[in-house]
Amino acid sequence: MSSSDIFLGEVIGTAVLILLGGGVCAAVTLRRSKAMGAGWVAITFGWGFAVLTAAYISLGLSGAHLNPAVTVGIAVQSGEWAKVPAYFAGQLLGAMIGAALVWVSYYGHFLEHLTHREVVGGPGAQTTAAADRRRSDAPGPVLGVFSTAPEIRNPVQNLATETIATVVLVLAILTQGLTEGLALSGTGVLVTALVVVGIGLSLGGPTGYAINPARDLGPRIVHALLPLPNKGGSDWGYAWVPVAGPLLGGALAGVLYRLAFA
Image (cartoon, rainbow, N blue to C red):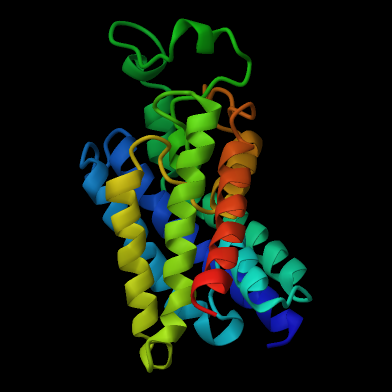
C-alpha cells in the first residue's frame, strides 16, 4: 500500500466511522431526535456497526486501521513504522471530517437542544457539578456527541480503563491472523465490530470507551471550533486520557502478541 492510498483510505474510513458513531450519540442525546433516550445499548451497537461499515469501505485502500492505537499495535508487532505517519494523519483528518458531518446532519437538532431552557437554563437545567461549572473548559451539554468523558473523574482509573479496553481491542485484531482464512474472508471485520460492541457493553461504562485517540481528539477539536450556541467547554483537561490510554494499550497489545503468539 502506498502512503497516498493509506492516507486516503484512512480519511474516508475514519470519517465514516465518526459520522455513524458520533451520529448514534447525537441521535440518542439531542432533543426531538426520534432516537432520543434510546440508551447505552443503542450507542454500543451503533458504534459496532460504524466500525463494520467503515472497515469494509477502507479495507482495500489502507487495511482499515481507523485508529492510531491499532496502527501502533501493528507497528510494535511487525516492527514496521515507516507508514505510521500517513496512518495517523489520515485518521485525525478523517475523524474531524466525520464530526463536522454529524454537525451538518443534526444541525437543527443541535440548535434546538442548545437553546432549550431545560438544557441551558431554567427548572431542570442540565448542569455539571459545581466544581466543574467553575472551570472554563467544563464539559458542555453536547460534548458527549463529539468525545468521551468519565463518569467518575479519576485520571489514574480512567487511564487504566482506556488502556485495558484498548489492549483487548488491539489484541483481538492482531490475533485474527492466527485463524486461517479469517482475514482473507473478510470475516475479521465482523469479528472486530462485535469486539467493539462487547467492549462498549463491558468496559465502556467508566469512560465512554474512546479506545481510539483520533476518535476522541479529532471530534473534540471540531467541537471547540464549531459555532454552536451555549456549547460549553471542550474539557481539554481530560483530553489527554483518551489519547494516552489507547496508545499505551495498543503498544502493550503489540508487545503481548510478540511475547505470547509470535
